[in-house]
Figure 1 (cartoon, rainbow, N blue to C red):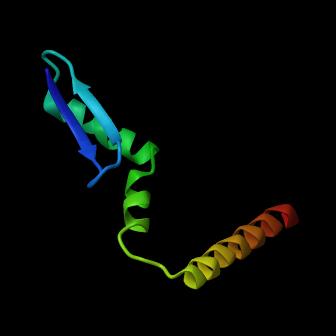
Figure 2 (cartoon, helix red, strand yellow; figure 1 turned 30 degrees about the vertical axis):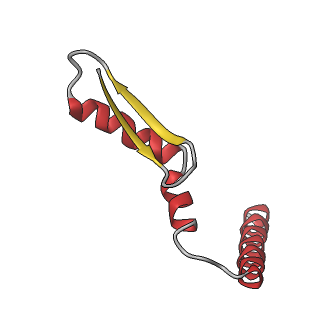
Length: 79
């Protein structure tokens, strides 16, 4: 049995893991792995941690995302 996994660096837990069944082609396991990574938003999380944001910048980004969500919600309610 073969194990395919992405592990976060340092002291964090295993994020995505797919066990390859006996006789299963590696392409199928890779497809399941990619789907699992996408569902768990691992790529988004890695990108978010790839650089440091100062606390003030983090607040501005959070506020900008909230404004964007509110505009989108208002636009949907208008239709």
